[in-house]
Image (cartoon, rainbow, N blue to C red; front, top):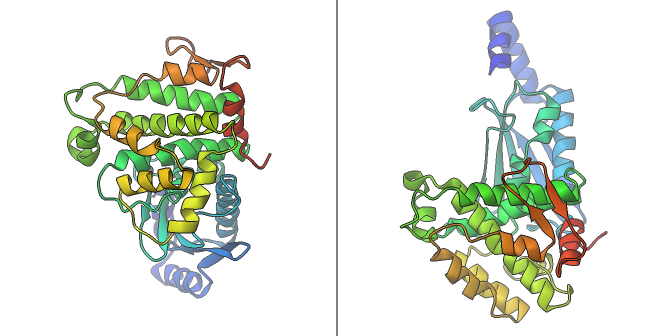
Length: 321
Ligand SMILES: [Zn+2]
């Protein structure tokens, strides 16, 4: 915001017009490719060529991180729209996925932020992770928010942005924030999730969802001797359903069908009826993550002796490493 006003104050309107015309005659789009897959990027706000190149490299890194789930993007075609806006002052004050044909990821970036601040922001990892399920947006949004929040951390870790300890610290700290949001404990998760504007229990909604996916992923891996993972199932979900628009319950039914399990739907029904963040210590203990919320926030201790310690490392590394 500050940058734009400075420009307007220091140039005559004629000069500004020339700049705008020049910008509009330059290409304002880029494309990224992975085999026969394609992402089209459109820059709505005028950018100089250096900044545009930096943004392209940033989005290349993010889309590479998304490949760490199963080696392909979850949609064969999707778009990313980048535009300027200041909002809260954060480097990426807003992001959202607009479902369509193709889906579009809108990213609002703060023109006053340094490139390294934009690169360090988690918003874009969250938004692209939403694409991993073809969610219609109709009801039980906690399932979709949980998946995006789970994978935003996993793909950052697999891309080397977060260490293994940092990954588990992010998840454990998030669970704790969800646990302390208790003001609507008389309402079930579906109710608060479907009325976010009214109840504003963002932490409970997001982190109950992460708890769901971590529990399902860990259980699936334990039942299959770590041969089948949520990563695998999401790849199969892409194959069958990337062009569909599915409700939350249809997605969990599909995952059970793909896995040959009776896991995702019963767990979904249990979580949607919950009145508080489920206790997170049992799942963290299973995975060998020791976390004491009273202690220094940066402290998680990872042990190799826990029953699912190898699964914890697999979640962190993914299959490709
Ligand atoms: Zn989200």
